[in-house]
Image (cartoon, rainbow, N blue to C red; front, top):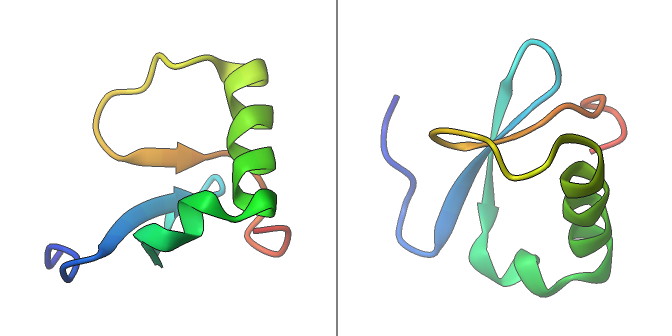
Length: 60
């Protein structure tokens, strides 16, 4: 896979780990913060490598 462009970061979503490239500025958006907090509460910080979110792609 190609590395993300400057200002973007990869997120892998769902059981198939579909890759999305998000602008870093999205980290400040309330809905993204809520999703990250929910994942932290459910799964903790014990992830190696890229950020993976176990939610449905449709939800994301």
